[in-house]
Amino acid sequence: MESIKKLTSFEAAVLKAALAIPFGETRTYAWVAERIGKPGAVRAVGTALRKNPWPLIIPCHRVIKSDGSLGKYAGKSDGRKKELIELERALIKIFP
Image 1: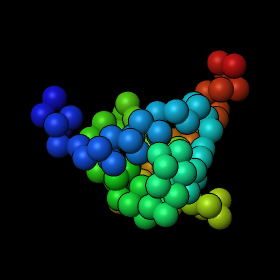
Image 2: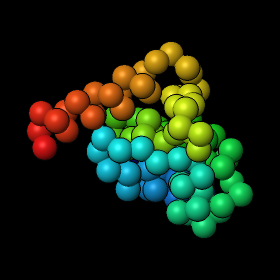
Image 3: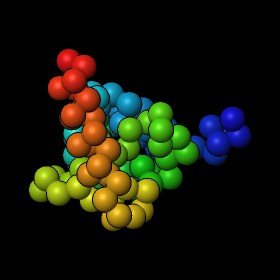
Image 4: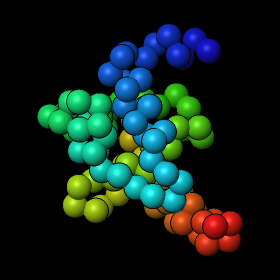
C-alpha cells in the first residue's frame, strides 16, 4: 500500500480516468487529459500512465494516441498493449 502514498494528485486523477474506460474499449491520451481538466497535459498523462503501480487493476493499456496508433505500454513498444486490447475485444465476443 506504500505505492498509494507516492502518487501525486495528478497521477491519481489520470489513473482514475483510466478506470472509467470500459472493458474492450479505448480512449485517447487527450481524452484522459480533458477528463481530468488538464487538456494541455497530454504528454504528462502518458508519463503518469507509465508510472501506474497496478497495471493489472488500472487498465492503462486502453489509452491510445489521437491518431489511433497504440503508443507504448509501460514505456515499451513490445506488442503487449495490442495483445491486451485484442484479448479484451475477443472476450467481449465470448462473454457479451
